[in-house]
Every structure is written in C-alpha cells, then in structure tokens.
Image 1 (cartoon, rainbow, N blue to C red):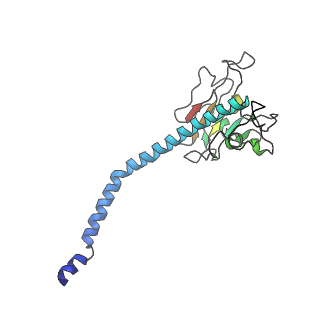
Image 2: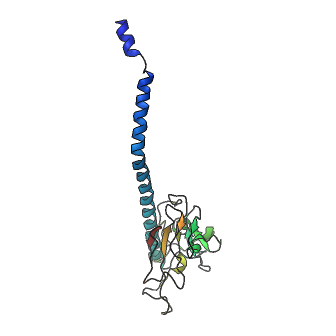
Image 3: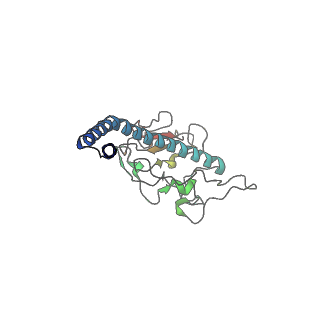
Amino acid sequence: MNATRARHQRGFTLLEITIVLAVMAILGLILAPSIVNFLNQSRLARAENDVRTIAGAVVEFVEDNGFHPQWADGQRSARIQLLVSPGATGDAQPGAEPWLNTQPGSIDRISNQLVNNRPSFGATGYPLKTPLSGAGWNGPYLASLLPEDPWGNRYVVNVEHLSNSIDAMEADGVQEKRAVWVLSAGPDGVFDTAYPTSSSQLRSNAAASPADISARIQ
C-alpha cells in the first residue's frame, strides 16, 4: 500500500517535463501567427469603428447647432484647421504633411468640441440647445473621451474645409467643395492621404489612401 501511494505521489521526471515543454513550444509556434493576426484585425476593426463614430458625431453636431465644429471659441470668431485626438503626430508622405499640424491656434481636441463643449479649452462654450432656442449644443456627441488610435497615434479631421453649402460648390458658387476626412494613419503610423488643398481632394474625385483608416464626412 505504501509503495503504491509513493509511486502515485512522485513528481514528474525530467523527461516528462521536457516533453510537456516541447509540446507547449510547438503549440506556441503554431498559434502565434493566428494570435498576431487576431490582434491586428482587432486594432483595424476598432480604428474603423472610431472614425465612423467621429464622423457621425460631427454630423449630429451640425444638425443641432447649424454650423460645423470648426471654431476655436464659443463666439465663433476664430477658426481652426484640424480636430485631433490625443496621440503621437506620426509621420506623413509628401502632400499629406498638414495632417501633422500642431499649431495651437490651428487645432483643437475632438473631445473639446464633441464631448465637453469647451472649444480650445475655452471658459465659454457654444450656446446650449433649449426648447426656446431650437438650436444649440446638445451633446455629448461621443460617449466618452476619445483615446489615441490603436497604434498610439492621433485621429484627425480637416474641419477647415467643412461647408454649410448644400450643393457641390462652396458658397461662392465657383470653387468645388473639398473632401473632409476622419483619418487614422493606420498600422504604419504614416498619413498617406493627400491633404485637401485647392488642387487636390476635390469632392468629385476625392479618395483616401487604403493605407489610412478613413471615414468621409463631406
């Protein structure tokens, strides 16, 4: 009885431990590519969802306020060029450098406009929507403060080109509207989509780079 109990209670032999470790290593090598692919797909899915969510929030902002979130102050006396989330500025291909804008007077946080109603961290936000006013800020338009994209870089929106004109032309009736994008630079952290200038990214032929994660607002 004691000999039997002792045989059952003995530890693993070195050979048994070696075999188990070898099997675990083989399984790890087999599963590693699938795990990496799953993580990459999860990051892409989150970024795609985030850019669509931001684009939808901008549309809701416009519907409530009657103007676009492109102002640095509640009185709408100073305009901005970009809305950005937290995160690194990343890098950009030639022609896409304006996405990296960090000028304090030219950018504002997405959360300031769409979550907190504190444009450019100002003390006074946009007028609030009331039953009497019929128009005004009625957020938050995003459920929470937006973090950086899944690769640690910022989301960007070129709000300077948003237009209240309902047709394909700007209010002057001459210049065609330019595209407005919500972008993530994607896994490589490099913005490849050309910034909408007077000679590129016109509304009729605008296209985002497939290397970026994008949602189009205008």
